[in-house]
Image: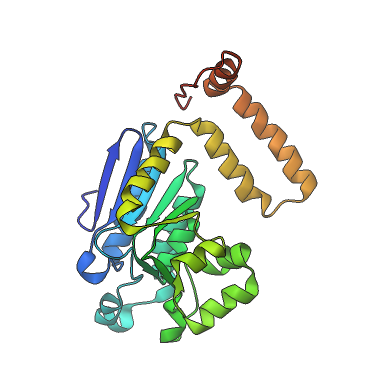
Length: 261
């Protein structure tokens, strides 16, 4: 697929997906949704990709759905199929990708954009970043996984408050509530995200992926089921070259060199 609404780059094991419609605060059109989902699929298929960064061009992460496109399609537009064929692919693509996904939140993330941010594994934000569940402003319900993700992260009372008030949640408050891992000055965001990405890309990739799988599955497991699944995954991890390298490096008192195998 040729990308016209996003930028996609792979360098030193890090794939960077940049939402690239800055004139509209990177609002999602149907084409941009398809391109983002396709890029995530490529990241899953490419063994050279060991970490993924998602960010926005210009002064915002994304304003969410492009409402001008929706209005332009008139009565032929139906939200349910649009979600199932589009945003659901992105959210499931991020959560199901067994590689670390870093959201570099450079500015406002609104609507479905909040779902994309929260689906990521690590969330690094500029001090200028904010999150806005804008759905109630136009009489809609939060979507893109927000009703599943947000209450689990901050509790239902706070999640419902953000949903019905559509109030802007600033970077420092989002950090205090555990929605961001780190908040940095705007001019330091790129460097800090790069440091995170390089650290993750040079780590034991299979271990990172299995950890993500275990934590995702644990939401629907009993303790006994989770313990059993951990044991199964640990057997898998123990057979990797990275495990052998990690043990050898520990015993030899040197830095490990992981290959993601």
